[in-house]
Length: 308
Image (cartoon, rainbow, N blue to C red; front, top):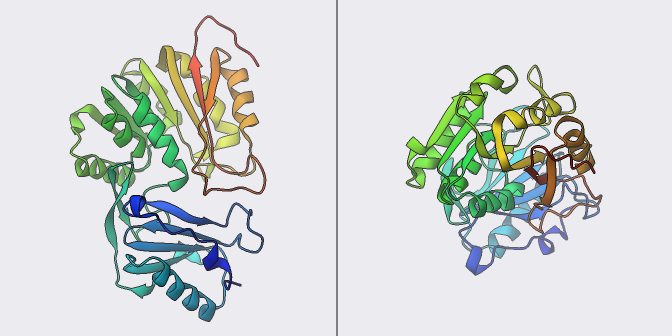
């Protein structure tokens, strides 16, 4: 099952050896027979994610081949998503539980085994780069902030202030650590533990924003169902965003295409004009268009109906 996969894994180049990145994206179903596996690089760790059980001898052989292909690798770890709590095991090399990874020259704290998600979604790499390039002098609202990667990128790009909102105090704490790792002044960032859908007025108290970033989970029991809830946020854009402000809407559901976002904007805030699409890195190949991460950028133009 893994005999030929090693040939498809593109090792990090010498120029990007320190940068975190996906080395093989099987979940996109672009490689027949390998939809059960992803391979990531968080220097010096190769991190394999399995979505189904496979032969352990084949996995061991694949692990050794990875160690040979990437000489700077010191640890190969596997996360078994098909098991409860997505157990992580060390397959080869030394045990590394925590490290500081680098993306676009910025540092992020990664922890193996603490939770299912390590702390940084690699398919959003170009999104964080875009924010860093467009953040100068802007006041940014970062909804569903997770570990505040957009905030780190925004402040590194010269944002005047970033307000981070999430319902999980643990990820906000890790977000603060990410700011400190990069020597960023946390007085320019706020970290609010809030249920977004019950806190619209509190979010507004910080005043009008120049940029809104919304990267919600597709579904969380008792809190978020994106089909039902995304419109509630889009409807609030006129209350939160300054005229000509930018709105970055993200969608992770493989069942929903960017048409869902366009339709939601037309219905709930037609004064938002579509400007551009931020695509994931090339390695995130998808067999079916629209199944991967969707990131759309709009411009809020009050008084102007820009229906599609």
